[in-house]
Each structure stands twice: as C-alpha cells, then as structure tokens.
Image (cartoon, rainbow, N blue to C red; front, side, top):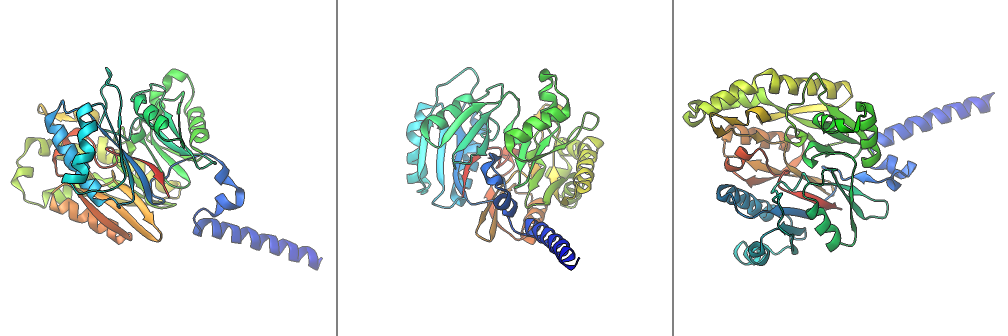
Length: 392
C-alpha cells in the first residue's frame, strides 16, 4: 500500500514537474516529445536573424520607390553585419547596380546576393512578406509554401533554385503571408483567410485543421463571419513576443496621443480627422477589443500599443491615401538572452515615444528604423517589406 502511494505521489510530482518545465523552459516540450521532428512555421519572435529577403520592383511609381528605398537602407544599416541578404528584382539595372550602391555608397558589407527574375504581367510586389510562408523541416532545410493562387511564385522559385536547402511547394489553400504570424506554439491568422478559401467548400474547422497540419502549430483565428478582424493582414495589429504574451494594437490610445500633440498638420487635416473618427468606430476600435477579449479568454497576456489604422474600404479618403501607423509590423530577434526589435519610427513624437517605451518596458533593445510618414500611405511597414527566411 505504501509502495502504491509512493508511486502515485511520484507520478503526480513528475507530471507537475513536466508542466512547470514546459511552461518555463523554451523548447522543452519539443525536446521531450520529439516535436522537433515535425515541420513548423518559422516563429516571428525566436532566434537570431540569419537570412533576410527583400523584393525591389522596378520604379514605375517614383514616389513609392523613393520611400521604400529609404526604408530599405534604414533597415540594412540596423542589421548585424553577419546577416545574409538576398535581393530579388525584375530590373536588370537594379540587378547590376544595387550591390555596388549598398556596399560603396551605403557602406554596408553583409553577404549580399541579387537574384533577377523575369518580368511578368503581375509585377513584382515590394511586399515581400506576402508571397509565401517559411516552414522549417526536420532535416534543417526549409520549405517555401506558396498560396494556391501562386502570386509572385517566381520569387519562391528563384530562391529554391538558388539555395540548396530551400524547397518550394504550392498549397491548396490561398493566403497572404502578412495575415499569418507565429510564436513557438501558435499561429495567429485573420479570419479573411477562411473567407478566401470558400471555394474549397470546407467549414472553418476543416480549414483550421489543414492549416495546423501545414504549419505544425495550434491555429488561433482572429475575427469571425459576424465580426471582421481589424484589418485583412494580422501583422498590422498583432505581434507575438513570447509564449503567451502578445502586443495588440490600440486605436483609442493612438487617437488620445494624436489629440494631445496640438499639431495643426494633424488636427486640421481632413484625412486625419476622418481617420480619427474611423479609429474610434466599431470597425477598428471595436474589432480590436473583440480580439483582446478572445485572446485573453484563451489564456494569452495581451499588452496594448498605439495603432492608427484604416480598413480597406476606406484606405483612400477624400481622393488621397490615408495614413497607417503601426508598431506591430516589426522584426524581432533573440540574441542569446537579449531581445531586439526593429521598430518603425514615423516622426510623430507622441506615438513613436510611447511605442519605444512599451517595447523597452518589456525588455527589448529597440533599434529605430526611420521610415517617416511616406510609407504609411501604402498600407505597410517593416515586416511587410521583408521576409526572414533563416533564424538561428
């Protein structure tokens, strides 16, 4: 009897120990249960950046070219010198000139490879995040999973043909990479992905199951058929920063900070005034609050950060592009015990300062990437304009 009691107590103690270790030691469950053998989508907040890809389209829009090139230089200047950089372009001129500009004029000496892809009817997008997702394989290679529509498939094809450890495959699901973010255990996806795959005649749970099989992690959907997500790309308003901790955009906080600036260029601007109204509405503020409630009900710790957004139907106001100010659309890496965030700086001091304070309070070293307000009119930021394909 005593022996049985001892075994029961020992078993209970072992279970408690495993639970504690699983919650406190990163990767413990993977090690014990051999989940490392499962293919998994690359995490957005774990590991050091090793290899990053940028897409540089031909400069048909000179304004967009100038602001995106300015961003491109800003992020390259902040990356460690041992990060491998791949640039994909359709332009023979950029293919020949960009490496020289980067090294000789910008004084950046990372390992840089430029890939030239053929020009097609569907022009190369600067939004490098969207065309594929990265899944790590058990053999340490990676798979580039391309959506069923095969938009920008020339990019993934060029990468897989250039790098032996990369393989490109086409999914039967449609998606944008910007609508998918991940930590070590979970993949967070906006509800629009479910709608995009209605042609498959699968219910929501069946699509989620396919996503979990593809990504090797639990899937959390933000929004539903009755309550849309705050924006069609989740990386604009949600950032995983730990196992159970998420940064979620807060449009009311952003509006409060903007109103306190007293800046006439903001307060007297018809576009800003309309956007302030929109960011206090159910479409944005209400949707963010519903996302907060859902995530907290699932056990996540949710921390709020300024977010000044739009919805697609109102991205153009009064005939001009509205602004999109997000501090969720970032790059994060871990260097040993140090956490680093590459944070967009827009030049609106009240918002920039608050975002820096929040990340620093969470233990991050902030690398400021000066991108200004120019890029905000095109509905994207740092994560949208890059693709991390390798982490240590």
